[in-house]
Length: 219
Image 1 (cartoon, rainbow, N blue to C red):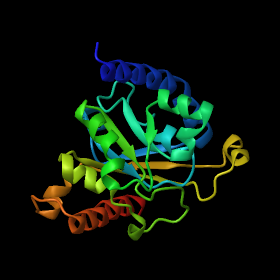
Image 2 (cartoon, rainbow, N blue to C red):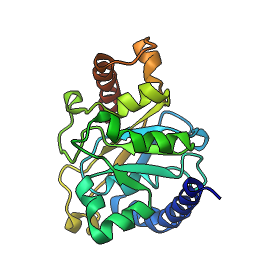
Image 3 (cartoon, one colour):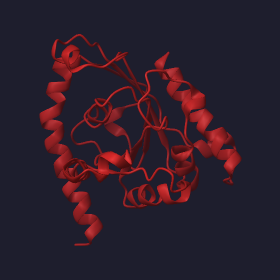
């Protein structure tokens, strides 16, 4: 069996185990509600899932909101370089599908790994703000996710996570959060731009379109 397929199988198994453990915990402590503009049971793969990013709960929330047997899983998460470089945490998160963002190495280099993942038929999760932020504005968007969609012609799935203004573990365990997770419709950015070519300018425009869709979901 090819090495890529072995990693895909390993990640899929790890994420299924994580789903079984984490989903009831997250639902109990955050009391989250899911709203979706599309039938989440019929979502295709691969997808580029993009979301706002307010706290460290966001990746496990996105990793467990879809049905256990969803074709979207396994989904691989673009993750901060310093976390992936840590001796223990890097290997642990890699097991569950995390990969390095490669910040500062250029757009082409940072998109090499997600292109390989999408090429294997797996989905990718990217937080286009590039890090944690309690505020959300379309101009915060980095071009990576939009460029990836334009270059591969893979649909973007916008997601908004609402209800965590300032996260603390104390409030988490006291069940003080009421989270809403809102899923939009998959969209091809090329169709939204009505353009068949890629350029830096189109990356900027597509990023604004993508961030605007997340903003709409946030209300």
